[in-house]
Image 1 (tube, rainbow, N blue to C red):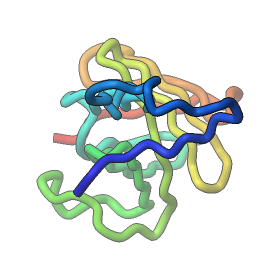
Image 2 (cartoon, rainbow, N blue to C red):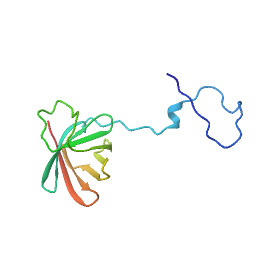
Image 3 (spheres, rainbow, N blue to C red):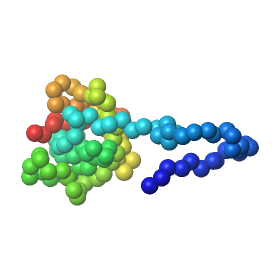
Image 4 (cartoon, one colour):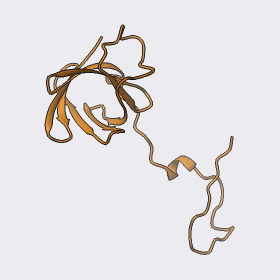
Length: 129
């Protein structure tokens, strides 16, 4: 493989402008690693209903209405939905579902999260071990 940069500037380009190697990673926003405490299964309660979320290392989250047979295996297929998330080591998690819904959580002690669904409805989660 190789890295390359395409010049998309509208100004004049001179061969003498770039000298040496380019750190291509510096041109792109770096994605923060997923915290260890988040990866895996979570039991989520929203409006009295129970859902099961699986957070993976690629910043993808899936949900299902069916309790997993074990908490060791990752969720491969889902009857529910798929979304992406960001998370911090300090306990903040933000999910954007493909449906357009959003969820924002903060750590509320131990292995528990509390937050809001679409910035209005209370939602909570407990880590499943």
